[in-house]
Amino acid sequence: MDAGLELAAYAAVQNLKAAGLTAATAESCTGGLIAALLTGVPGASQAFRYGWVTYCNEAKERQLHVPHDVLERHSAVSEPVVRAMAENARQLAGADLAVAVSGNAGPTKGAPNEPEVGTVCIALARKGQPTHTETIFQPNLSRTAFRNLVASRALALLAQAK
Image 1 (tube, one colour):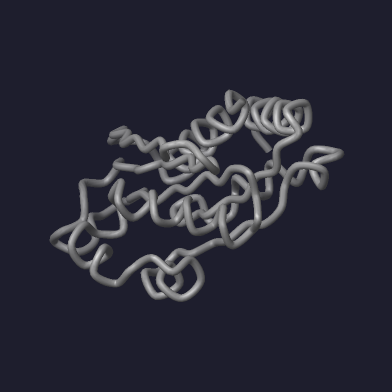
Image 2 (image 1 turned 90 degrees about the vertical axis):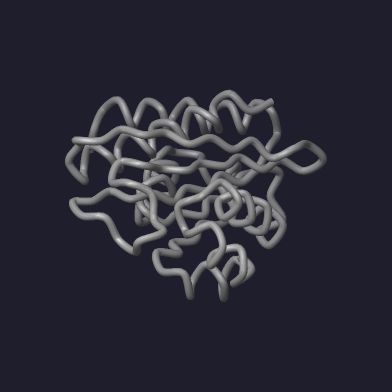
């Protein structure tokens, strides 16, 4: 495992524990990497509640209750979709925070309405606060490098949460 990612996960868990917060993850393009990194930290059970891997749209709809029309209108790789993923994951898990990611790791573009390879949308939902969303475009990365970049950013958001 990448030492930088392990350190980022450690920082996220320590921050969550120090703040008395719990978190959940809703992942698509990272395939559970963020949850695996978090649960690799000793004591993570004090801060980590649930993790979902919702790789296909059907899973996003069934497991995280992302509205079908939002997926159709915006595509799976969009800020409205990750916002719904994060907000619903937070609520379903009974967690204080939830981070959600959905992206196109390539090597080819999917459906015509999908963003370009190297695009990822990330959301951080927190009870009682507006949900933070962002889009990152990093073309020309391998799938592994892309997934690591996405996981690193998601962990950083959890490490900075107050």
